[in-house]
Image 1 (tube, rainbow, N blue to C red):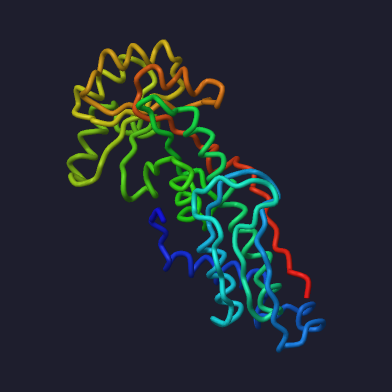
Image 2: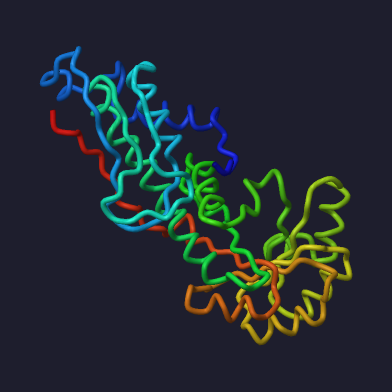
Amino acid sequence: MIDFGLDFAEVQRIVLTALTEDLGTPPRDVTSEATIPAEQVDTAELVARADGVVAGLPVAAEVFAVTSQGHAEFRQIVGEGDRVTRGEVLAVVTGPTRALLTAERTALNLISRMSGVASHTRKWADQLAGSKATVLDTRKTTPGLRSLEKYAVRVGGGTNKRMGLYDVAMIKDNHKLAAGSITAAYRLVRETFPDVAVQVEVTTLAEAREAAAAGATFLLCDNMTPELLTEVVAAIGGRAELEATGNLTLATAAAYAATGVDYLSVGGLTHSSPILDIALDLRPR
């Protein structure tokens, strides 16, 4: 099974936060406690209600582990990143019935969201197949869920650009204005944080040339046409990695990839992906 690098400490934090939101303090599921004997045990299936790509099964498993205090057995039927079809069973979980139903909505919220991001990302990866370009995500993520959504991008065949404002410096229009120029902004970042990767946003061929001359090795080409990007690729050559962004769609992805850029960044991978509909069905007793 492929290891997509899920941070389980972060998973535990998110799961506990989500369960607290749903169960309150002190935690309780009033419906399940009132209608289901504490000793009752059942088996349930996680079932896809639509075609897509699965991401987040280990996260769902952690939700059931918490609500059952470790007494639920979670068995994956499919793997992370697998394409699935409507009606397919993704996992089977057996444990105290109260715990299964208490976990249900939190587990489904997380895995449906993550699988939706992975499914959307896979569509982009499929469009770019055969080119050198890779689809990148952005920081346009759901607050509190960034690590899970960026994990889902990786599962779907995409790549993470940066996790936040701390690991990569990105010089954008407002930074250029504040510093006085691209060259000045790049110099200041390099002097202040010599070990941090730097990317420079450019909107014209002249800006791309200035950034490369200043020493930038990663350019974000914002809202450029394929024709202009082709010129930038020809001018910059192998001196810098090039990323296209701004108003990209699946319909235009191939045209942008054909320019020779290295990456296409798509905020919609995380801010606009619809969920993959997944349900929890108790097996008949």
